[in-house]
Figure 1: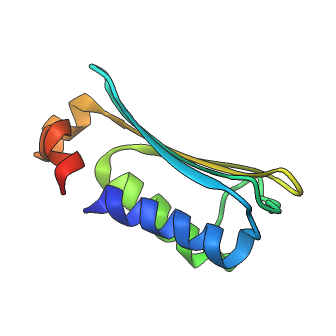
Figure 2 (figure 1 turned 120 degrees about the horizontal axis):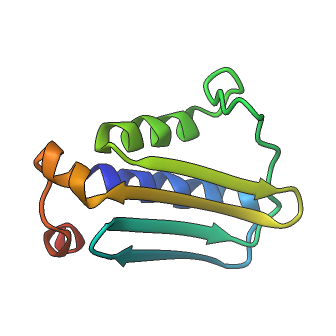
Length: 110
């Protein structure tokens, strides 16, 4: 459910803020883990170097980061003004096992 909510928030941000013409979601599974990417061609935004989302008023991004932390994963956000945004979530397989999460094929079916 945490992965779903991260994707949902990222797509909500595309819809509400980016003015994108296109957006896409990719989910890749490997023996090492899972990678989710949400990419758009919208207007982009400036990300502070310290990534303090709450202090910057970016509550949705802070929630995404918190969920990634709960998964034992890593969330990165790359954005350039006028060039769109790329959100990447990496969740190592060994962390799924430690957290007691479902196998990758079960996550896709949720």
